[in-house]
Image 1 (cartoon, rainbow, N blue to C red):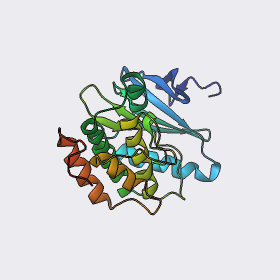
Image 2 (image 1 turned 45 degrees about the horizontal axis):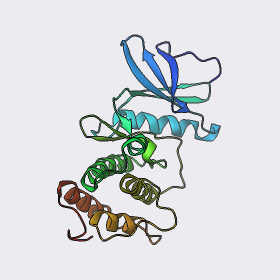
Image 3 (image 1 turned 180 degrees about the vertical axis):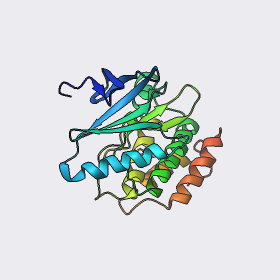
Image 4 (image 1 turned 90 degrees about the horizontal axis):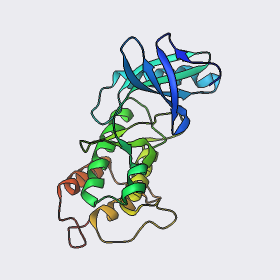
Length: 225
């Protein structure tokens, strides 16, 4: 962080949130809390990192933590995000245990919508994990944690990471070499998304997650994926 205490003359940096690259800050002119993520890209990726962040700032989607501002100073890109109340999926499962399948599917619908919106802009998240999925008190799931550009990654990498995140949501652990067995539709879908040959079409994944999000009876006897 160096000696930086205020960004762009308005965002006063406060305490770290989780990892050292994310901090609470106070937007002095607007009199509100914000969250700031620090990105230190290689010099050759600085312009792209700032451009990706600004495109996300222009993208207003109900399943993305809103980006309020982007500040590029001294080779560092600071992504200023709105402060949203909630707890990460990682923390929620750690405290309360795995989620019921319909709740996990609802989170999956939200995250997939957010990823699809980013992919439409040519932005691959690259860091989809339980720590970057925020569960709000109203039951929504919001995606955050966009980091440095990773030109070598394809959107399918985000789908694999979404599957691993959903596996954690319902099992309380990453998939490892052997994803959890079971005939339940959500677990079947997760295994299909983790297949080394590649995930099913996005439309099929989306439709299945939407159906499961509404299926309160999802269980061993429910129709499979």
